[in-house]
Length: 119
Image 1 (cartoon, rainbow, N blue to C red):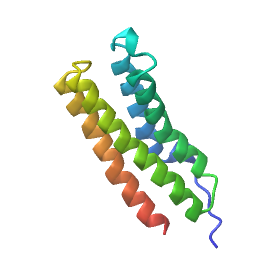
Image 2 (image 1 turned 90 degrees about the vertical axis):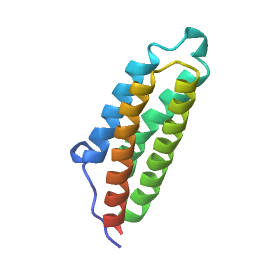
Image 3 (image 1 turned 135 degrees about the vertical axis):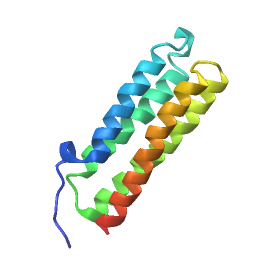
Image 4 (image 1 turned 180 degrees about the vertical axis):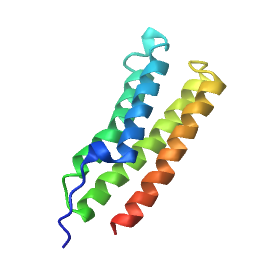
């Protein structure tokens, strides 16, 4: 079994994940305050999950790391859905949604490619 470990701070997928979190926090800072325990909480948790799972999984074997990558990918799809809901509630503009969706899609493509190379 392969024992190679990855330095998550050098991974492009982790860096992009952190960038997405930063962008998301800029967006949710404009949401209505009464959403603090609703969609704001959900969006912040799933966005933070993306780079966090990459970081945690990077210390594991490739097989285990792949599982953490799956979780990060799932969180990215969840985030996309939450942001669509936020746009439909007029909490973010369609333009801002498009910008962040492009980053999420880029993350997903890069991450799936990375994961395929782990196997």
